[in-house]
Image 1 (cartoon, rainbow, N blue to C red):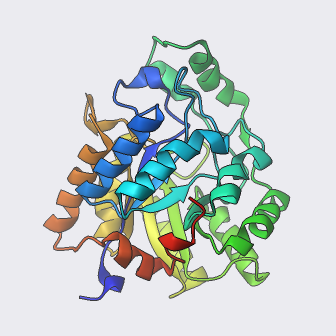
Image 2 (image 1 turned 30 degrees about the vertical axis):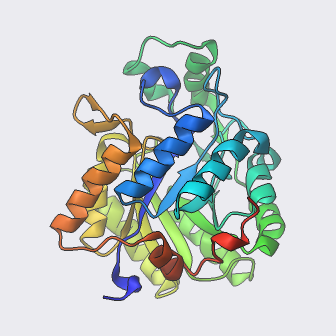
Length: 310
């Protein structure tokens, strides 16, 4: 079997959506993030998608100095592909969000492909106690939050990060975002193969119905043909359902505590690796083969770990 026919698992280790009070298992300190990433890779993840946190408060921290300790540890201890966020937190400026990718020149960086509402406030109905003052305000404030990713912002990001030969995980939360990828491809600012991460279940983006998944897949097929690699991210309870659906059609999958804190109904996942093992079980149950990090590099045509600035 060639690498092209294998399935890539991405693990989003710790993001900006959930707050530390929501789960005691969310990695926050540099050592916790590094260990979680290594465990996810050992469980089967080829790519680890990474955010940083203030180790004292757990607040999202996009300073390169916050990333450096765990990035060096992961690179030393694991063959995993490092994927750095340029999303950071919806409350950050675009320049703040780009800084880690600009400094460390990763093989992959995430790229949110459109301005959108980004509703986190429904989580307040499920969580009532918070350890840090910023957490409740962070969620409540999303009622009036616009996650800015304008054409000017994206153009700036592609101009600044493009010379580093970093490829992108194009995070597409709705159909228009796929058309935005096509727009920048037509202008020659990005080149195939495009790693398209279709995101389902964030309030402000497309829903989680199977028709939504198929609609995004059909649109991407029409726009990009053979020039893209399709992956899916299901938020919250839809994580494994959408992964299974997409994988049955040959899609790649993303799991991790950034996207869902759960391993089953009412049951918190105790680690990122636990989610990776579960999705791997689903994939292998479908007769699919998991890509190693080097096979994922071949599938996505990445520059290689020796070309990053760590």
